[in-house]
Structures are given as structure tokens and as C-alpha cells.
Image (tube, rainbow, N blue to C red):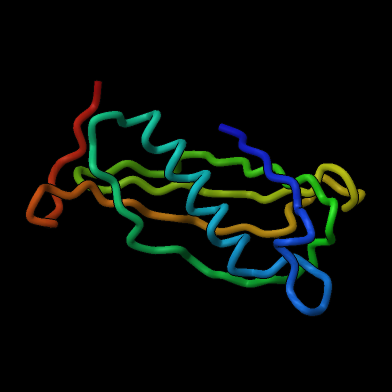
Length: 118
């Protein structure tokens, strides 16, 4: 599933590039939206991100595409791979940022519980 976000001035750090915390927030949000649409009725919480390496500066005005693909579904957890691609200014379809994110379904007491599928 694809999601998009425009890098506006309020998302920049003091060097004029996208603040990494905003990128991580958008990664979490786009993956959560995908997971909640694929597995409605579950209480999914973020438990981990794989490597977080900021290798490319992201400029203001960039249109980011978050390509979210499921790579694993376990009994209580689901993992997605996320490629962040710059669609406007980057000049390449190569990802600007790549990570994996894992969610766990939890019960009312916060303990892992099997993911319900429709």
C-alpha cells in the first residue's frame, strides 16, 4: 500500500532538511494505517523498527511515497517493509530510506494475543 507526504517547512531541522523524527513518525503512521486496514478489529502496537540509518538528506518540497509491504505475519505479530521514495526532487526511484517495522496485537491487559483475520 502506498501513502504520501509533502515535506513542508515546519518539518525541517535547523540545517534545512527533513527532521528525522518526522520521518520516523510518518513511517510508523503509514505502516499502522496499512496494518489496521489489513487486520481490522485488532489492537496493534509498534514494537520495533529495524535499522534506522539516515543516508540521504530529504529536502523541503519533496513528495515522499511510503511503499508499505507485508513481509511476515505471525500468530501475534505482523512485519512490514517500508521504502521511502522521493517522487518530486530526488531524481531517482531508489529509496531514500528503508526499514522494517513490527506490530504486535495486544489484549486489554497489554499482553500479546493472536491477530484476528477477517
